[in-house]
Image 1: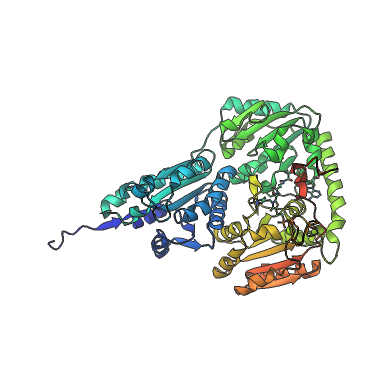
Image 2 (image 1 turned 45 degrees about the horizontal axis):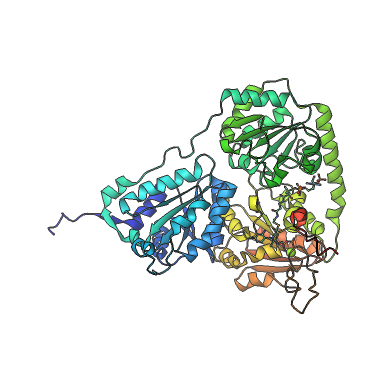
Length: 567
Ligand code: OXT
Ligand code: MG
C-alpha cells in the first residue's frame, strides 16, 4: 500500500472497551480464561478497573450489588460454558432482586455449537440465559457491539432493574473494522432509566386512602433504597407521621433509631394496621404474601408504589396502585399531601410503646459477656461498631447469624446493609463485600455464618490481593443452624455439622491478612475495632456456642415436616 493510504483499524476487543467507557462503566468483575483473557488485560490497560475473582459466582454477586449501590449496571465477565454457568446464578439473583447487572460472557463458535459438533466449551448460552434474566442478546458483528451494549444497559436499568445477558462469541473479538466507522457505531445511552411519572389520579387515590386510616403503616423495601430518593422519602415519612417498617435491606434508609421506626414492633404493626403503604416492597414470602396469621384480623387496605405495573394485585387486592419510579412518586406525594394531616396519635403512641418494650427486652441480652459467646453477646459488640462507624457497609448472611444481626444491629444510613435478598441465598458474602468496598470506598464489616462463609470463602485471597478494608466476622458455631446435631445411624458426622473448633482465621493469614480467634465479646470488640481502624483485610473467627442457634433461624416454620418421623 502507498504511504498514507493505510486505514486506521479497530477490533472487537477495543470496541467492547470503548462501549463500556463511553457509558461510564469503569469496573468489570471477572474470572479470566479463553476467550476473554485479553479483553480483561486490554480493559485494564485502558483504565477500566478489572477485578479478578476466584469463582464467577462471586464476581457475579459483586456485579449485582455494584448495580444496586450505583444504579449503573454492574458488569460481570465470564468465559464460555462452565464460567458462564457459574455466573448465571448471580444473574438470576440480580433479576430476582431487581439489581441492574450485565453478565457478559465469551462463547464458542456458533457454527459448531449449533451443529453440536463438540466445540471447546460448547453450549447454547443465549438460550440458557434467556429465562433467567430480563433480556438476552448476542452480538455477531463488530459493528453491532455499540448497539449490543446500549440495549443491554438500557434493559438492565430501565423500568424494574434486573439482569441482562450479553453473548460475545470468541470470533467477534478479533473482527476488524475501520476505526472511525467503529467509533461512530458506538452508542452513548441517553437517559437510560427515564423517570416514570405516576398519574395524578393514582397519587390522589393513594393519599385519600392513607388519610382515611386510623392505623397507617409504611413499609419500605429495598426498591425504595435503590431509588436514591432518600430526602424525598424522609420528608414524606416525617410529614405524614406514619410509622415505617423497613425490610431488611431498607434498614437505614431512615435510621433504625428514628422515632417513627417500627422495626422493633414488627408483629404489632403488621397485625394492627388498617392501611399499609408499600414503597418499593413486594408482598412476597418475606411479607407472608399480605395475608394469613401474621397480618392479624384487622381488615387491610393496601397502597402499593412500584415501578412495575404487574406487581399490583400479585398476592392480594391493591386498592391504590401507584405505578412510577419511587423518586417521582414520593415527590408527587410530598407536593399533594398538604399540611394538616398526620397519623393518629393514639396509634403512633401504641407503636412506639411496643417498640420501646421490645428494645428494652433485648438490651440486657446484648451485654452478656459469655464465653463461648452466644449470638446476642457477639452482636451487641457489632451493634456498637456500626454505631461508631455508620458509614461502614454491613454485609450479612447465615441463618441465625442473619436473622439476629438484622434485629440487633441498627443501621443509620441508606444502602449500608447488604444481605441475602429475596431468595435468602448463601454465598453473596465475599462478592458483595468486595464490590461494596470498591464502589463506595467505605470499610466493610461482613457478618457471616460459618456455613454461609463457606460458599464464597476462597475470595479472602481476592480481598488480600486488592488489599481491601474488609473485616469478616465468622460466627463459628460448628455448623448450619447449630453445631450439636448427631447422626444416630453410623459414624458419619450429622449432615448439618462441620469440623469442630475450626480456625477460619488461619485462612486469612495464609494470604497475608490479619486473622484473629475471638472467644469472648471483649476479644471480639478489640479485634473488630482494630480492623476498622487499620483498614487491613481481617478475618475474625468468633467462637459461638454450638447450641445457641435454632433451626433455620427465624424461618423454621418453612421446613416441611414428616408425619411419619413423629411417632
Ligand atoms: O415483633 P416481634 O415480636 O415479632 O419481634 C420481631 C421484631 O419486632 C423484633 N425486633 C427487635 N426487637 C428489639 N430490638 C430491635 N432493635 C428489634 N428489631 C426487630 O425482632 C423480631 C424479629 O424481627 P424481624 O427479623 O424483623 O422479623 P421476622 O419475623 O424474622 O421477619 C420475617 C422475615 C421473613 C421478613 C425475616 O425473618 C427475614 O427477612 N428472613 C430472611 C431469612 C432468610 O433469608 N434466611 C436465609 C436462608 S435460611 C436457609 O435457607 C439456609 N441455608 C440453605 C441454603 C441457602 N439459603 N442458600 C444456598 C445457596 N444453599 C443453601 C443454609 C445452608 S441458611 C444456611 C446456612 C446457615 O448456617 P450458618 O452457619 O451460615 O448460620 P447459623 O444459623 O448462624 O449457623
Ligand atoms: Mg453456623
